[in-house]
Length: 256
Ligand code: F6R
Image 1 (tube, rainbow, N blue to C red):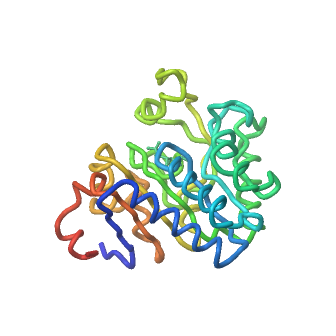
Image 2: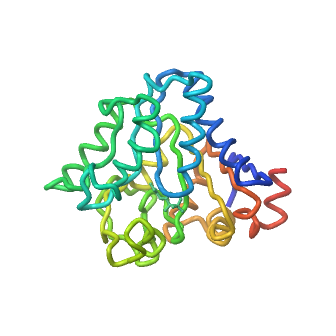
């Protein structure tokens, strides 16, 4: 498998990795003014958003022209639910950098007709001119967004069933009870993600090391959704030393 142009950055510390990722996003916002950002949630991104808020407060980084589309939302959680990704995004980023709700988009997990909601989400992305930069984390199952295996690489925004492993991964927000984590979510598809103009994946910590190595060096295919990023012509992966610890010396050397 050839690896067209993945740009791999491995940093010594977690803080450096977070700052590189935030700097990447901030650079696009400062340069373009009105980019369309694809955003992710989860623990990995919390510090990225804190770093962006700091740049807004200290350096005047202006988010007023930014449009955003998030990857996913749990089915059944309304925007006011503190466990929803709507709430996560408002409290960690949107309200802090002055992004009005008219500029921010997440799938509606309470939609009566999830299929229609997903189709409308795809349409809204297209009407915004597509996503310029899609931020991605990686889940324990190798998912990007909530694209659990196997997710076809041409999959679109849709309702998915969450793996047990993912519900365990995300149980902290639900009283450490995996059964309390919704079992379904609306997520952009792998195909939707691959249509973004560029991709930025961030992974942190030793718990991600094995799945990062499988995604970046194992077979490319729907069993590991994150392996799809290797097919994208403009993809940057930022890892701290711990999450990069299972990569082969060859891959590390090729990107040194
Ligand atoms: C969240 C998302 C997921 C997470 C992944 C890693 O919007 O799309 O793919 O990025 O589950 O989550 P954390 O960062 O909590 O390990």
